[in-house]
Length: 153
Image (cartoon, rainbow, N blue to C red; front, side, top):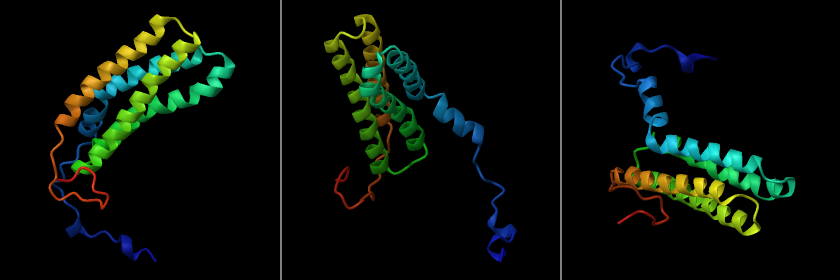
């Protein structure tokens, strides 16, 4: 029954370069991840101060948008394929823009002091600048074709 899991010494590579601490730091010490965490804190505070009706209407969307920024980044860091990294980057961009848009909706409704909304907008703009640096480091994979024709030559 457990024959598939026999220890085969020949399959194990003692020279494996995987270092969990290094991989953890690569993700969680990255400036883009740190900024995503800042945005999460600012958004959490903003949503926490909304009245119940607006919290129900906007809160979940805003929290989803900001949490996706860090989750998608963490996933993308382990991927080499250019096209797949770019797909994830597009998702991150869309959610950052959605979150920024929500600050203007809240401003129109007069729910928050301009300073609070501006803090989140500045953080998102900082995120955008770090994002541009991050995606400029992607190595283009000539063989990537997912059948959808996006991010191919």
